[in-house]
Image (tube, rainbow, N blue to C red):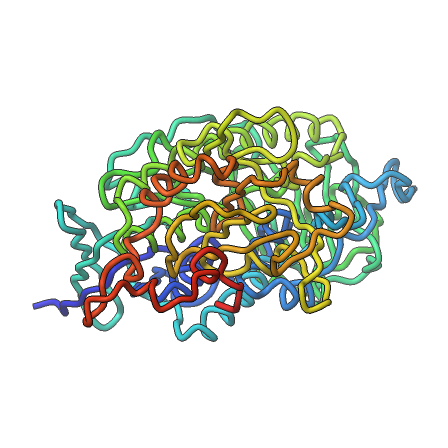
Length: 530
């Protein structure tokens, strides 16, 4: 008889998406398990680009500085043509931009995937959890009350009863297969290798690109920061076995660049793969959801796969946490509604970049930073009345500099950081606001508030006038913008995304819990740490 266990959420796949979801659930106090059929952590550098929006996510999760410490900005690219002749490009193929008050991260980071996942695992460990490697999902069944998952490990079989199951188990997802969800798309006619090498003969101050635009001879060597490794990326023939050994990769290099002086000393990880662009027809069936590569797979051009996957998990985490705490289960419908169009959009961009790369054009623009992505058409985006300027419902909430009433500068991102919703009240408002809730932080900006908007910087960035309310979601997107006169609509909105608060009911002595707060505190709660 197999072992029996229970949990609220079973996450299948301990890659970047699974780890991100686990961190978000852990900080919300949700019971979960994170399993992976691999015997240990992924060892390759594969998804090495961390885009600016993902950096903002990682700041909120408390790990951006640790991640930046093991990564670097992308070094310049050196191009080699006609034998050993080379030139250093004056125009970078990757967009670099200095930070601004509204966009504190505007340059992609290069971080080997094994380092990104190590940083995520450390953050998860600090929150009291670890991935369980060597646990493989065999199958599952679901009913109205939950999911029954059947696992095997080297030591035992186990049956896990959970309220929700999340499949982050890769492009060949078993979870997607069991759900019988179609995975339409196309194979893009390109096969490639990616390998982590120890080698001699190349400097580490640039990325080395040989024979750009020639799909039969192209090679790119990227020095991986804070390691002695280079990542090799190269297209290879569609047919035949790819020899990923030291001698096999040496032969490939010598054939494509005779006399280069590059000497392969070792291979720590390597993979050959066909490039695909595919998108699952559904992200949710009942109590089972898909995320990451299980829901969408991308060609590597543009570095969007890992980033889109992390942001899937970031979107799903707060919604699962809210539903498990008592919010309406219909909230989970917004996950597919919001994230599937984003994946479709990014797939279109990166497949276009792949076609350009075939002709030697590797330039990448701001659209890859994902700072401009949002959910304006979402059922969770509310504007009263419809706005014509400023920040709109569904937009990413920009950072902004404020002055605390105590005299110290404050970043808006610091106010937003954590698991809560944030309601920003612009100016002094006498009308009633939504009732206090542990999942809602209410802050006042303006005279008499805890934050001062010096020179109307915040107001101009957001287009927020006196007497208006701005609601920001836990994932840093604007949920609602409306005048205080419509605050009842805001109360109805919050009832669909927040669990019923104990502050809204009576305590054991029959007195409303919110009555213990001073009248001013009922309307405006001074922000504190989570």
